[in-house]
Amino acid sequence: MIDFGGRSVVVTGAAGGVGSALVAALSASGARVIACDREGTDLTGAGIEEAHHFDLLDDEAVAAFAKRLSEGAPPAAVISNAGWTRAETLADVSTAALDHEMNLNFRSAALLSQALLPVMRNQPLGAAFVFISSVNAQAHFGNPAYAAAKAALNAWMRAIATEEGRNGIRANAVIPGSIRTGAWEHRLAHKPEILAAVGKLYPLGRLVEPVEVARAAVFLASPFASGITGTTLNVDAGLMASNLPFLDQIGD
Image (cartoon, rainbow, N blue to C red; front, side, top):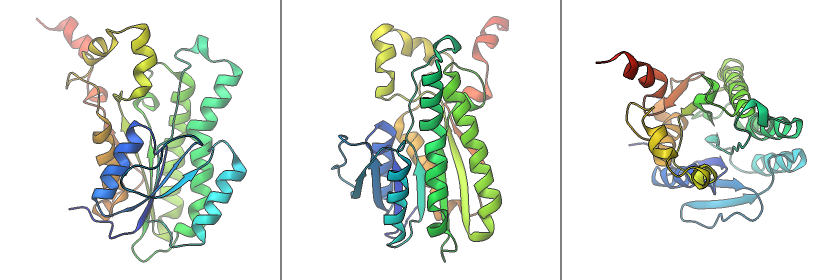
């Protein structure tokens, strides 16, 4: 059984669908959860030991949060989960959209991890960064700015794994397929049948659930994954192992 033994784990985007699942899974695994999200979000749920409201796009706020953490016991892990996208195709990617999606989905996580590296180094039990990425970083499924940001996040993860391994720090990324969270509501409002249609693209016949992503992230953050660093773990209901539409065309 995974047991963090009361050590702290930082979670960004903790008020969202995957964030809430992460809080629950970490708390059940003996972690002291430090939950982070924007002002106005609800971080009062069960399992949260410490709540911080700040904007990841505010460099000074990120630096201040890292400084506060450095004044206490260093965290066992940081799970960068916050993310957002709306620019569905290249035609939707304005300069403002490109900047916003790259900054939120990559730059903010990169700067936060960089700011926390000093306090994470050389712990007797080691430390880990886990980045919630996306299959969009591995193939094109739309949302090109978001996809580019997640691909950059994967590269950043490998840099930490390579350069900080000697300091006892591991880094990995979870690669979800489409996750059934509130982020789908704007699509459902426009096209209610989209879930059934998208589900047919997945070998498991459905989208991924938030708890499935959370379990994978908790594993990678935990001592159970002590020998795993610099890698990606797909939680995608089989999407990247397959091409079901092609198979449907050639099958009997």
